[in-house]
Amino acid sequence: MKKLNYQDVSIIQKKTGYNGFFSINQYTLQHGLFGGGQSRELTRVCFERGHAVGVIAYDPWQDNIVLLEQFRIGAFVNMNEQINNEMDPSQSPWLLEIIAGIVEPGESQIEVAHREAEEEAGLKLLALEAIGDFYCSPGGTSETIQLYCACVNSEGAGGIHGLDEEGEDIQVRVVSFADAVQLLENGHLNNASAMIAMQWLMLHQEMLRDKWQNLIL
Image (cartoon, rainbow, N blue to C red; front, side, top):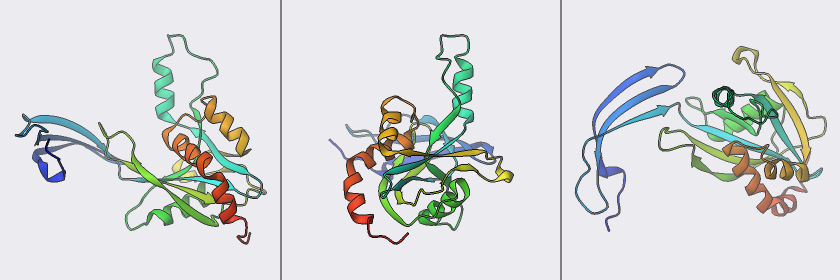
């Protein structure tokens, strides 16, 4: 069976349907087939907005995690579509999340991690451990997210943060590691970045506590 790669795709035409904060492009293409030969001409639409960084902020001394709570239009639209169906009244478009932000031109992923931690949570990152990167939904978007676990001091963390010019209204919440595990198991951490980062932290918590315990606050 043939192994396929990037060179086995031929772009026949690209059309831009929208170009603003993000782009929506339509591609006409052909690609190689596992059994040999080429596919017929296919049309695929791709949502393109660049790439992002996510950071789960962990305090190894207090065994706390710093989470963010903010309104998300995608969650609201999804719930609004279900309004006439049976929907759990406790559902909310204010989601619990980890620190995250878009990589701006000329910025490194680590620079984004530090910038967003300050803007969204008022936190200084003392150390970073790379978790990995993943495609958000590769059937329809090119976006990837690089995840990190950050060492932070959670003492005094909390309050309302975010940039006024971006319309951000972010409630910062400090929860114990045990409570964060319960939030995950109960379905209250229900976005991909938070779920992946939290599951990674559950596997590596003891390693990080050993590694970071002697850092200077």
